[in-house]
Amino acid sequence: MSQAQLMDGTALARRIVEDTAKRAADLKDRTGAAPCLATVLVGEDPASVTYVRMKQNRCRKAGIESRHVALPAATTTAELVGTLRALSEDPTVHGILLQHPVGPHIDERAAFEAIDPRKDVDGVTLSSYSAMSFGLPGFVSCTPGGIMRLLDEYDVDPAGRRAVVVGRSAILGKPVGMLLLGRDATVTYCHSRTKDLSSLVREADIVVAAVGRPRLIRGEDVKPGAVVIDAGYNPGNVGDVDFDTAVTRAGLITPVPGGVGPMTIAVLLEQTVAAAERRPGV
Image (cartoon, rainbow, N blue to C red; front, side):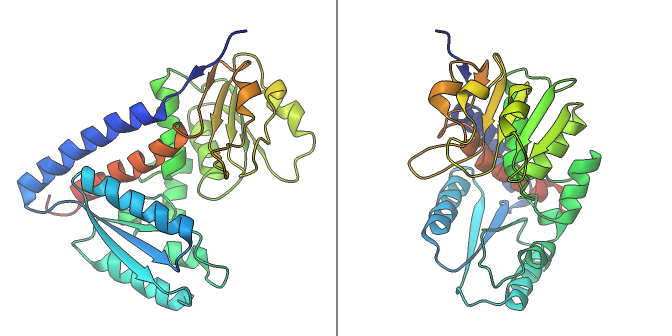
């Protein structure tokens, strides 16, 4: 039985970070200041704390300064907005990452919109989404951006292909669909109220699973030779795709872990350096 080729996000991310580190070093040599990413965390959710620490470590390895702002869980929307606006106005900060989720009592959209689009290296503002949708310059949402880089790395041209995106979150499902549409794919969005998901997946040349439900996409529903991008991550290193069965039908597939995950951080670091390079006077 043949098996799909694995799309190695770890190797590609490593090359992106190496290039990013060279750009960061060159920028510091020219200007005397290293690129700086500010991370903001509300509360002490264990997973979020781990993610932020990992991002800080990756920043350090890439020659990017990391400034962490830890806020108590009781922080209000107004307080968080004030913090993000202050960072937006700080000329020594080049990129801003608000670690989410931020808690149900906070208006997350209001918080995101407090980030200057020129520093929105996580691609979460309405300005960034508009730019992605219209193919204009700006910062992409990091996971969708990483997915597109993986497709390019493995010579997958979305033009004319049927792409099915399972998930419609504002920072993953929706933007990756718009990026695929911008590359001339025919895009179908699926979600919790989609009827007969299996029949839609069976027609897909490209499947992007981004819904956060373990093994939702069954291998028997994968079209032979399809490209399967698993952007889900669930407890036990389980993705949104039933990998063991899907790998016997797909042409290309991302593993979990080691597929989409490393690409997300690589794009974040790359966009932070790009933001620093674009600041006035550089």
